[in-house]
Image (cartoon, rainbow, N blue to C red; front, side, top):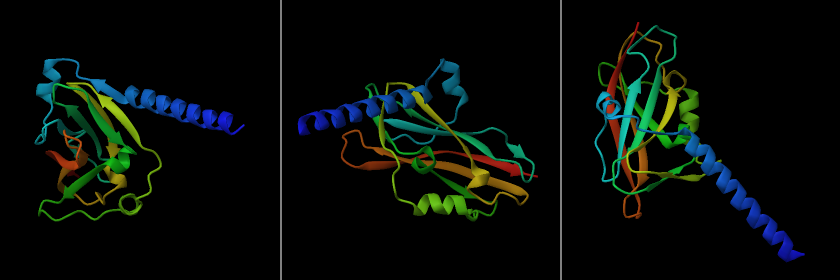
Length: 179
């Protein structure tokens, strides 16, 4: 009886792991052509990943969402593992105004940073050259209601290539104007 229960638990874990891998791989988008790489701006690389941030619109009306896409690319010549919990928690953003001052965080952003509980944890295999992409609405995280020019940069921690610890990646910096 105990043996059957243990087998059932193990099979359940295997099925959940396989389903989460399939789900995460649905969001992984391989690079389509060489021109796509040249069109994107990338931040500094560590030995295995690049991080890129792009804006949907460089000018946004006050009160409208500021939408960004963050892409992480495997620039090594081997498959890598990317540990993911929730994209909203895995990526953080540095948002400053035209004076270089940090833009106030909204309640949603503060709660993301304060809540250390992990709802899920998956490991995604990222092939050489493969890009994993996530979209974010920064208007939910930061007070972007005042007219002006804002600088935005994404940050993400990834495992070091040797697997011993993590390293922070920074994306390129993009500017958005709120009118």
